[in-house]
Image (cartoon, rainbow, N blue to C red):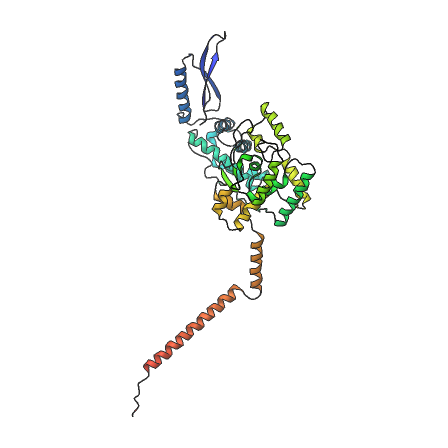
Length: 424
């Protein structure tokens, strides 16, 4: 848990003595430094604990502050608890909301301000999906403020974002996949330091994200079991800090072809080199950045520059007009579903936080489904309409009923016929 109050030592002017002080951010988002006026460490630790407890329990009444101060306080409080990219998205949403409604008091925010914000985003030609993301981040800020006791109520709780149509899922065909691998190999021969063919085949075979592949080390590969582990990395001498997107470790299968390519690639690398897809030249440069204190966790997410530029070149040479590297992941997951894996199994292998993500983004309509639907439509065009079949079935049932009714009538007549005795 992140420490809200820090205990510091402040030297005196003559540098011969010191006293303790508390350093924290108060309810209004302002940084406070309070001198305790003594040098008793045990007493100072107790005072620090009491102030920490006060901030966490939020004994203060709901505060009144401007939106800019309120939002800054929220960002400071959540820093380190969520991903850096999430904080960036939240900061952009906050900036747009303040620009729309003005720097009003946070206690004056109402539901209509949320509706005005949605219209503001749409007037700026933002898509419904982007607007929905901004509304989601904004509602989270107010929800946290209500949980902390800064607000009596969540003003945007019932605000509904605009409905966004589902985007079309782009998957590569078998022909396109073969073309990407073929031209990726040619791209390597022209001087590229990245093993692009292996990189693309790994994405197609495991469904791993770009950042997961770039941060995969040889320790993650189990050649005996033919698996690869997707696991976070600690900040060590030979590896930099890296976190999984959904904080879920998972193990993925490797094909025989992938194992063969990995073994060939490992034999061509220097002994003890940790990363699979980060070239030696780039790795040495990153180590220099790390020693100079110029490397961050955010940079470690994508350690290779101009990645999309190089992939787009390979895609263009393969004759593919549109598509991204992430579409390789979508292709892999869609293939798993077509081959009979359940949604839950695909969710676990993909590392999704919820099954809705798997359904929303990766259930692509495959070519064989379209072919079967087309065959069904052609069959109906040849006279096999459902309505006609139903009528035929209905007529058959009616004929059967009439036959049964006739048989029953004949049986009744037979039973009612008087018995005649033949004289002998």
